[in-house]
Amino acid sequence: MGWILALTPTLGNAGNGAGNVLTKIHDLLLYSIPQLAKMPRDQKYLLGDRIETKMLEVLEHAIRASYRKDKRPHLVEANMALEIIRHLVRLAYGLRHLSPKAYEVMSERVDEIGRMIGGRLKAASITDQAKQGSG
View 1 (tube, rainbow, N blue to C red):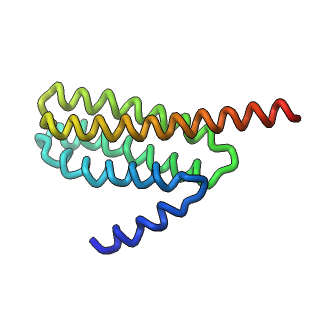
View 2 (tube, rainbow, N blue to C red):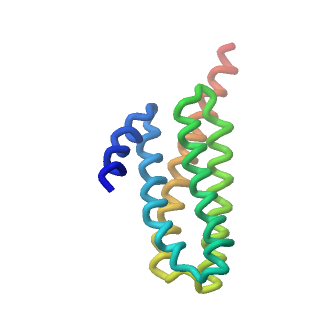
View 3 (tube, helix red, strand yellow):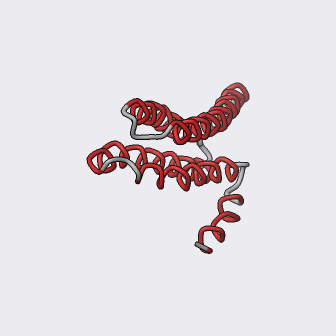
């Protein structure tokens, strides 16, 4: 478990303030994976895996955006994956595969990450517009 804590500073130093969103996504995964593991076997390997995979996809796109000059395409993909996660989590809760508490925590964290990515997407769009206006 100590190696996870060793990763936290690395995530925080990814550049351009991306560390905070990476840490939030990491925390969402740390909370969600055990919750998804509690799902019934047939749904754990179907719906649960789909949710987990999409969360990992958000993390991947956020990391890629933190290392790219043109962040917008990766932020758009991360945002789309988050929207899919929102619907899948709502479906899992509707099927009673997530407790009300797990649904509340996961939804709040996904919304927070969505606001953070949306802010970075807006900033990237403003930067792109400024470059077009000066060139």
